[in-house]
Length: 190
Image (cartoon, rainbow, N blue to C red; front, top):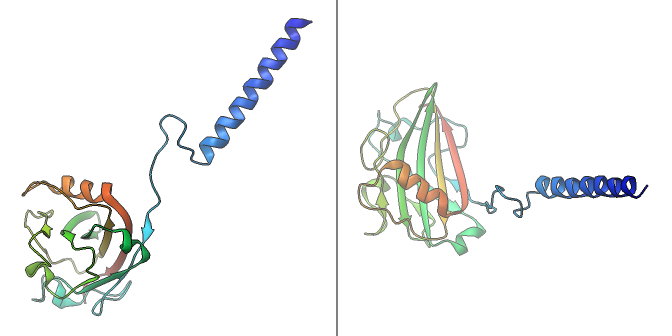
């Protein structure tokens, strides 16, 4: 009789322990091995006087025009904590994806870049990465049918990569430091 009682208590304890472990896992508790320690990412609002969400990219900012990068603006409470800003333009067309522009270490007190900013960076510490095509700087989108995402990232520290660092290394450094992000998406080319 004592063994049966002990077995029942062990089963009950195991069920309770399993229930506690499952509830911790479902709430995202970081106490369990292998759980993500990801932090909450704040939101930025990204706008442009030239671009509109889900509208065509104006031809002058594509490879068919001569304006270079479009003007961008960003805002959000998380900017108060930012140590630098980064911008990434990526393109998705059919089965292809590419990164067309990466600019990083924009001073944290800047809240906009004017047209063709890729040619006139905010300061000497602001850098641009080599994009998918191998070019450093703004590579204007060329495919008439596609999705073009201008993503702005507020970072908790400056990006420190060596000159000529591979694109994946720069993007990982941005991702590791992101405290807030926002995006302006345009589709197709006018």
